Image 1 (cartoon, helix red, strand yellow):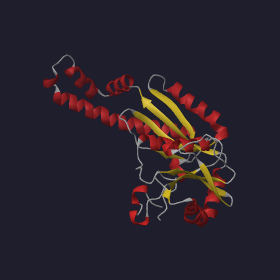
Image 2: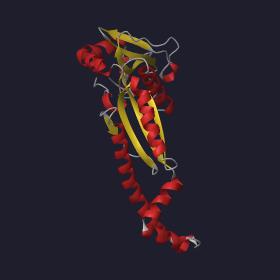
Image 3: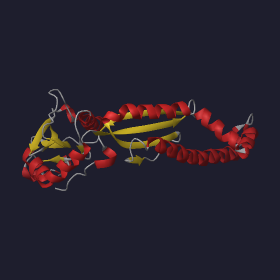
Image 4: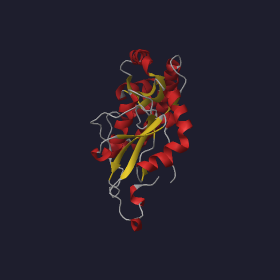
Length: 261
């Protein structure tokens, strides 16, 4: 596989190339109005019991905009609602439909079919928790005499005279947040353990992130997941806001790299 910008100009400019989104069972057909990157119609290229969801794209159009990424995810997540999906990494492109079969499906038919069988009825869910800033800062200060003293020394004083104290307080809060995040992530994992042991803990992307966990779960257990996360949210009322994203494609568990080609 190649990127559109790698196309050899000496071979003549192709009218289009084929973008590959995912591997699915052969009986999965895209909806008639389904569109992907650059609003191109989604097609299914089949080989035996498996298929690839693809669309044509302009080889001269560089990939990587937020719209491109959203279109890629939309096809994968939408399909995951109705069938098992093996996502390919963003940017997988081949020259034509024959190459989809010869360079991707034929060489990995048994592997892909087996993986799809294992994923039947499963999807990924993201469990996310975000600290309520005022509440968590107050909790940290209340638990730390040093932080309490620093806060008192800062209160009502000009910023230029309290820079060192502010920096010291910030370090205390930062270290405390790391410890609380570790504890709260462990509590969440323990709560999820009766539902699944297939989990991935993601690194925080924001200082106030409390929990970021991806899980692979049977779709028919979504109600139990919602109940479990709801109980955690009630336990952490006004301290951590909780939400669930999904069902979505199993990005954290079975994303396929772009095959070399």
